[in-house]
Each structure stands twice: as structure tokens, then as C-alpha cells.
Length: 134
Image (cartoon, rainbow, N blue to C red; front, side):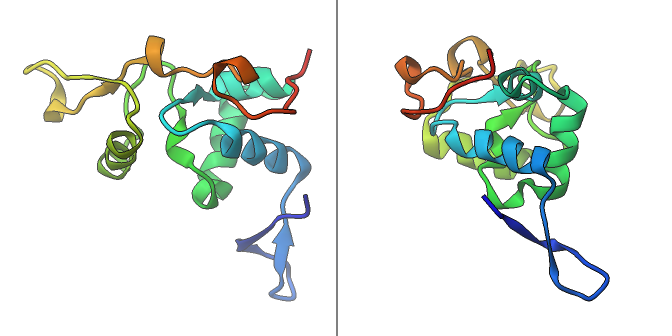
């Protein structure tokens, strides 16, 4: 893939090439269809390496250039600090949401994970030719 990150630079000031694992995580994020999501753990399982924290770290460092709002927490809570931006994307894409109760802090909805979660298979609106780790 050979992606470079404008945010990470070498000692000579050139854009640094992303680590292999980061490239793979971002590639999965790019393949998640609009209106669908995968959890950090789903992405790690799909790749067959790492875990939710490693995927979260990659998304925090390099995820700005991909649809970051489609890689989410398993409880469906919106990403702290980015709730309104993510919510705008979810509404635009028709991602299933569960409205918050009146007692919920900030009254922000959560993702309806049972309906929004993508399992990565082509039959579930995924990309053709993408093979998960088996």
C-alpha cells in the first residue's frame, strides 16, 4: 500500500511510511460500508492479530484519513470528544442509532450495534475480494 502519514515525520522532516499493522487496520476501516460499523475488537479479529487497544491506538494516531467513525466501541457509545462529528456522519449514512433516554448524559444516542455491526463478509454489503483472517 505504501501509505504515508503527514502527521508522522522522519528526522529529516519527510512524511513517514506507516507501520505494516497500521496499514492493515486502516485498510479494514476503509472497507466498512457506509451505515455499518465494526468494533475495535472486530477489526483485530478480522486481521488475526493485535487487539482492541492496538486497533484503537492506530485509529487515534492515523485514522483521520479514513472513515474513523465506522470503527467503534463495542458498547455503541460515541467516541468521546468526537460525538457530534461522528453523529453527523451516522445520520448522513443512515447508521442505525438507539435514542438516548432522558437520564443519559448529554442525551446522545448510541449505535444500535445489533443492526449496525458489519461482520466483514461480502454477503453483508461488504467489499468483494476481501478475505478475513481464518
